[in-house]
Length: 187
Image 1 (cartoon, one colour):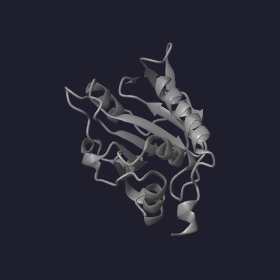
Image 2 (cartoon, one colour):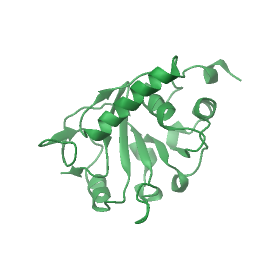
Image 3 (spheres, one colour):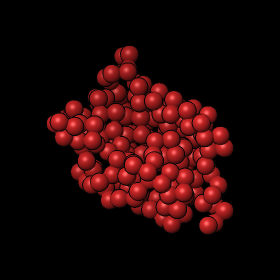
Image 4 (spheres, one colour):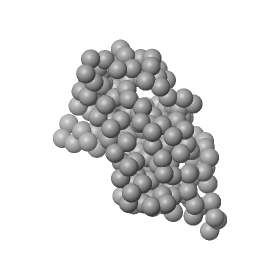
């Protein structure tokens, strides 16, 4: 086994994963806010934020889809060693990670069912930059209005129209994370 596979995980798993989990939950609870997140040093092309999210939220019962450049040998073995998460196609995943273009089309992912809306996918979207500016957001967790630099608007509006079904999104860039749950209105 290569040294790169063994390295890059949490130095202190219980502390680092709880801090990372808190950052992800804060981002989900307050759409449009950008949180710092750290703890993992994954292989390229994953950002530290994406690697940290994967180590925090995935385990042996969490099917993951690696899209585009994220689907490489270094990421596959790193994720397998640190989480044991099974790699699957987009239709079977609980989490998918990649760039916006690589994750397309969004119709490939499970959006839940009327009986089980929670059985949908969360897409971890790698972005070149991430800021609380740009597209206007309203809804739960937002006092008046928030903003987030989104790759486009129409896809998120279509996703919101599926509510209570739909996809949830976690955006990562460098050591930052933001989220857009399906409950958020994008305008």
